[in-house]
Image (cartoon, rainbow, N blue to C red; front, side, top):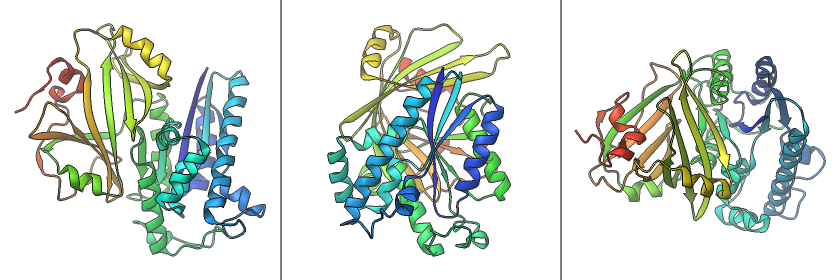
Length: 367
């Protein structure tokens, strides 16, 4: 049995309602039993529990996050009893969406009451897909008419969209689906991205990689849409056509674990599967680490800028450069870099900068 849990989120008028319908239809055709976890805020507010009826906004957000956690656990429990080989749990918004409606202090107090960390909430989902509000790039289609609960102006929708992206920045599999094409292409791209994440399609996204000057760490850490993640990555013993790695991601002292298995199929296509690990599973797999490959340690800064999601990897063995990666939705999409990040050269497709190579040769190819 394969059970994956993903989040579909996004700003107002981003197409989420249509997307959920398309996911259920199209992924069912690929053999998945698709379970939809309804948006919690809608059910609470329609039942009379709202920020304006509770004592404070913090009181309401605690109720919403507690209910959302329980709903997701119930869906996971139900999925574990089903006989389907492939199950996809789709959450109409996830726990960290609530952060957009709170101050940092409120959020900190709530997760303490819930007995969880921010990393627990973020990495409890296998993937996050953000649908950009129509108020960014498709303003003529931004409307309040198709949702009685929507009240935001276009300017407010853009600000809220930024808050949602910032809340999820740092997730190991976050995809931002923008409005650079028409709405139908937006939906098709979303479905393809999900299908690729599930291993149903070969990669179609365009990943670009750059060597940049060693970044200004103070500037990075000051950005509201930037998340610092400490990564430890080890490679397990495997045959020549497989690359198996385990990874520990630590944010604010809390760690999560995962395993990625890349292998070549009979037609020489590279297949990639991912799954979360428990701490115990991770510790057990450390016994299978390939002794010929060093552990990779790096600090990753996940940064959202101008609607694009960047990953800046800073390695302790380099003091003059770093690696920047971005995955684009279109081959002709322009990469808009913050002026504070200075590109030395593009190394897309250069195997010298793969982590597995760096593990074998710590400084990699420096020129």
